[in-house]
Image (cartoon, rainbow, N blue to C red):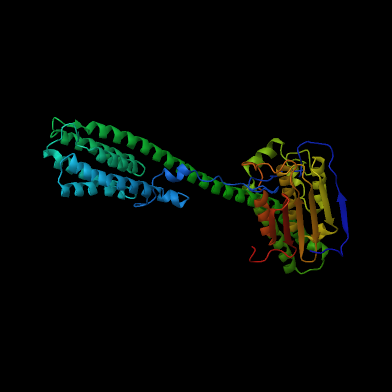
Length: 486
């Protein structure tokens, strides 16, 4: 925007040797939140932990293990592991059942396939895979029961069957609820106990071995999955809390803007009331219906003022009530003559563009170098809502600079033409670099700026600069917000 035809009053402030806390606004107002980042810093969301993505229950039936992993190789890892086990166990099972246990070639091939191939199914549907493998292992124990040469061999569970079964248990524990895990473990023990009644005396009993190992694996994997589920729930709750916090911040800022605009609207309503009440005295000789009309206008204006006061009571926060009640609030903090009492801040007029120079001077006294360029007549050209919004935008921007880039040079420019007011606040990088943004605070920063600009129907442009600084540019139309902007 060009403003060359208008006279400007420039004031340049240099930093003074003082390190006290900054006071950007004579009246205490919210500063910048974590999301504001006027110094150019941006809050970064921590990447999701790998165990939170892997060691959790799948969201849908039939969803593979590790389906939420960020990388393709991680999602394919369960299939690769089970395929490797199948490729290794299948030929070994067939050979051992044929040579060592004396099973026929047909039975050995069928049992080898039934005991190993379902391991691939365990990645997506471990309960079905477990039922198939347990049934195949049980049938295999009965098939070799009548064979000769079982002396010293493992029975009823063969070594290859134990390895495959334990892999199924791992997949089961990473996916299913505790009740299913307990049922599978007890079924394993029950099958072993029943087969134990037919155990040949010369064999090595593996019932207890499989029962203990499967129980231990189910306990470990079930615990890990439970931790992953808990971490996932915590992450979801944090996301919900963050959204609620952002919504609460927005509502608080809108309520704060509404409280400030109350003074502007109340002033206009008071003027209407005074003009309507004084019309019969200023314009003698008016007809009686006209007098009654002016009296009705004054009565309606007074009733509207009362409704606005009740609305302000609803919008005022409990904290503000407490501050005014004990006299420790912003009484007289605006620098006006209303100080000294608990309600001084409420009786003081709302600040505007004409107060920006005082705001900059207070910031400089706090140790922050600021340069101000203020177009002459900008405060008179702007309507009350734009006047107040321009001041608050500068205030929030300077508060962000003080908080996030201490010691950085800042420039404040306020210009206007026939259509709009342009507010520009630019700061350089902080001396020690932009610090980490705070996660808690009392201010609303960019949220408040956006709401004030939206209120006037203007536009707001914010973002970091290449040199590490930050820029805030707001265009506030003088003719009021359009219908779309509202």
